[in-house]
Amino acid sequence: MKKKVAVLALSAFLLTGLFGCGDKVPDGTAATVNGVAISQEELDINYQQFLQLYEFYGIDVTADDVKLEARNSMLETMITQELLMQEAEKREITVTDEEVEEYLTDMVNNQYGGSREELETAVEEAGMTMDYYKEAQREELMMTKLNADLVNHPETVDVIKARHILVASEEEANEIIAKLDNGEDFAVLAKEYSLDGSAADGGDLGYFATNGVTTSKMVDEFTAGAQALEVGEYSKTPVMSQFGYHIILVEDKQDNVNLLEEAEKYNSVLEGIYRYGLNNLASSLAETAEIEVLIDTTVVPEGPVTEENQTEENTAE
Image 1 (tube, rainbow, N blue to C red):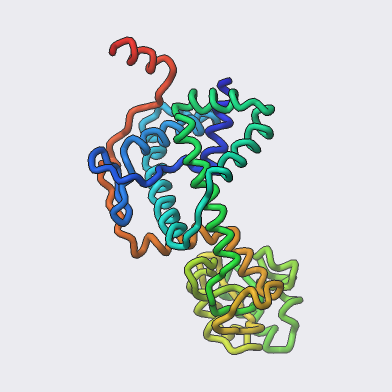
Image 2 (tube, one colour; image 1 turned 30 degrees about the horizontal axis):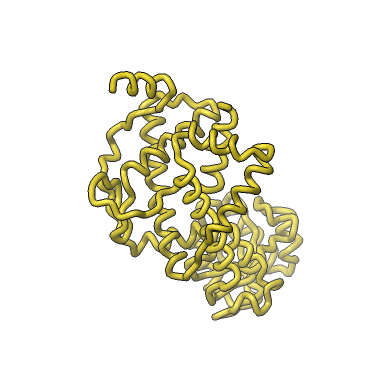
């Protein structure tokens, strides 16, 4: 059964996160997010689950630095989850009890051989009640629906379609610009010289958004370099970023785009929202949210909780 518990912890953190439910708890509060409390109890439960996940991958969970990282990472994750839950509620996204039960039934059939009892035992051994675990699954389904809402009702954004050639030095970039000035083909040069994965496609990056809270962006230097060019123009001076030196060719620009009107055309932007929209949205929400951490994040937490020390604690009581 220990293997089952580890798998439960793994699925919980990679799929659901086992995040707090956002109850307002005046005492024993670890943090608040826009006035909503994340309780110390919820943090402790999730932290212990996180340690199980670390242990599953062979990490020494008795080390102080590991415990500190696990607890602080979990608190950050719970804060992010609370921000997204609040956004889901603003969008009137809900999950019914029937949907939760259907989700659990699928989990039982796919992971526990059809035995609900095995799932309940795994949940108990992981230090949770079924009610708590059900709420965790409800929040996972909420996040799935929120993610779908971001894609099905995308924000209006400005987009640019571009190609680029990425090289390691400014000197090489200038040599390639000279070849372009002499009439050589951009796509051919990209295939020959670019260090980027897009080289095989002639440096084609497709469309990317230059604004928005759910869209994925290029690095600032690249975006500014592309915005400075007219359609059909390429960089006359190399654009430096953390990745190297770019030569950019702008092939199209569109403002205030409804991405769904030409979904196939703007598929790269929609794909970015689907894959990273929740993270992008959370980062944006955090910029304006009132977040207060009420615990000392430099103090090493206790743990891990084991069957042995749980037994000792119960005996002492």
